[in-house]
Image 1 (cartoon, rainbow, N blue to C red):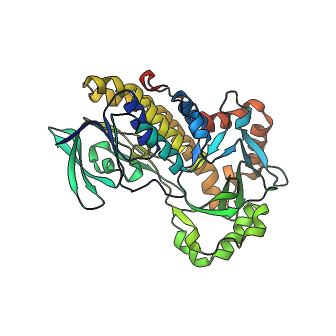
Image 2: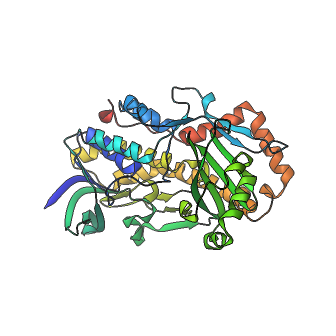
Image 3: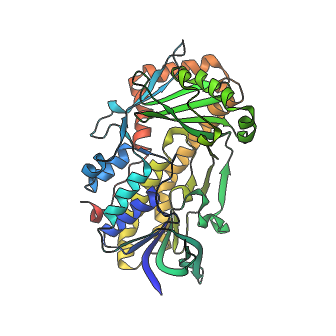
Amino acid sequence: MERTTCCVVGGGPAGMVLALLLARAGVAVTVLEKHGDFLRDFRGDTVHPSTLALLDDLGLTERFARLPQRRVTTVQLPLGRDGSLVTVGDIGALRGRFNYIAMVPQWDLLDLLADEAGREPSFSLRMSTEATSFLTERGRVTGVRYRTADGRTGELRATLTVACDGRGSLARSLPELRLRRFTCPMDAWWFRLPRRADDPHGLVGGVGDRLLAAMIDRGEYWQCAALIPKGTDAERRAAGLAPFMANYAVAAPWLADRVHALGSWDEVKLLDVRLDRLRRWHRPGLLCIGDAAHAMSPVFGIGINLAVEDAVAAARYLVEPLRAGTVGLRDVRAVQRRRWPTTALTQALQRFAHARVIGPVLAGEAPFGNPRRARRMAEWVTTSRRLNRVPAYFLAYGAVRERPPAASVR
């Protein structure tokens, strides 16, 4: 019978960070990742200052610095009276060593974490291995059944199973965890466009006809997002690529000479935007963190930041009980109690942005119901140094900063 102390289901940022922290503390941990590699495009590639500080605590700053990356320090929106770009968040003005967001391909970050964890004798990573169901005994989750890519099946017993397998998590099928869904007014299209040296830099937003644009400076190209009304993907694709790109050029005029860079709709990937969270993140023997516990909207771009912070908090609360073999319901409850306020606050802010800004714009109306009110609010934020630092700090660190367990620090 296969056995481990902690079975981590899902090898994304939350799963790999948790596994590394536990393995460094001497906890036997096995990660099950259903894919054969980490190479998936248009995943969250933003590494925030809080995660950069964590990597520094773990002694990985030099290794991370060698990864291909682009540093972003500003967020710009077209809020000037003439539609010009205005900086609404300057992360570079924050104090501290890591006052930037590093744009790094997520697969490179996951490879680094997996390689570092692989140096610990208590760590095991099984690629191409999908958890298919939970093992339960007397109401307690005692591990998982799994299936490999070649069709082999098996069972892995664990003292604790942690679901880090995203918003399609196996744990979400458990009715006692009670999934709560919130209304989302939009879906997102992701694609790439060439970038030129005289283009704006940083994170840039724009507004078109019933469309919101977001561009992430990746150096040689823009990683572009288009927010469209929920459920209109097929209808808008049928209208043609050329009208869409012309509308996108209205939102980002400096891209007007590159509207023909996309060859077909195959280059435009759809993200079905969801906003939800489990009312309970746990049951005996099971804990959910990251998107498995709370699927976030792309608004503010901090979903990965929250997932990593979940993992750090979980490691801090669970290391000692796992090492002692005494982990119980109160230990996993403590993780949810710690992370719940931050999650609920962030989702409340996202819901406010959906209802007062994104929803109205996608419906062809003014944000906040009044163009003058929206402009006054924008001017109030952009002209106040203190207020200008609020969105920058929130993007950088979220509402609460988590510290790793001492046993994991190098």
